[in-house]
Length: 139
Image (cartoon, rainbow, N blue to C red):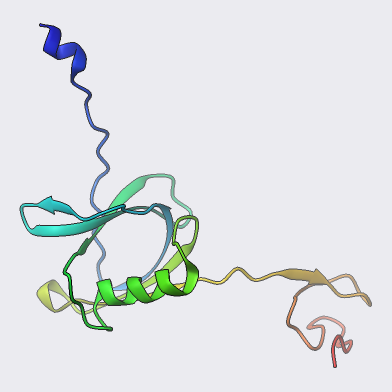
């Protein structure tokens, strides 16, 4: 039984099934290359739903050529813009049901916070006025 010592059991993560709605997903691991499944080639992203601890697999159909509006085309555009998606949070909007589902992917930008010098309230770094006291902050 020497073969049994060489075999590693692969850690599997359950597939992420998205119904109609909006989701925030943290990308934990990006695929190096597509994998072949019984449904064809897929890119497998390891993701975590915002606020949940379970790791899940997001399967994206892979093709050598894709339209801009396809899930693959949108992810390609995000990778070209951000370099990589690992560690980023994706906003995924799912519309439709069954085979007519449409996906929209975008990166949730991290908002930097500052403190109002007048009242100490937390404000976004691009704010021109404080929401609490109304103090003018910039230009």
